[in-house]
Image (tube, rainbow, N blue to C red):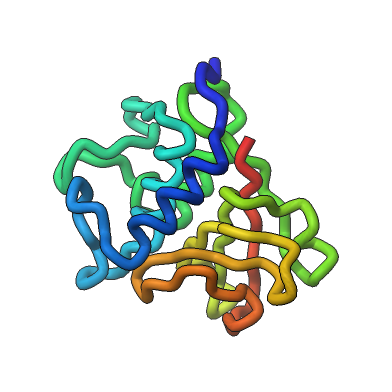
Length: 163
């Protein structure tokens, strides 16, 4: 059912362009819980310009007309790793338990972090891999670009390899 292919370069270019200065076409959730997953969805959409308007889909029209998966960490994960072939991007989830697990990650993939071990609460966009600082990310809420994943303190992490 996938009619588009994921343009990783477009997703990463979007991340760099809007991570520090949010795109005014989208509501900025920084002051009401965080903007990380909204930002990650925008990056995904830049690389895979196909929304899914189903009730359990992935879309953004405006603040009051958007899917939970557009802005919610767990909802985004659930949409991306769904088993049913429906429009929109897809991902394979991998646990990130150590340095060896980071190898499959590529620019344009996502990482989600759990700070308490109970639930995942932060979404990061991979913008570079393989450098001296390892995986570099871009994220909103606390706007960061080319930020080393190694600088985060977290209990668990998972990768979402976008296909």
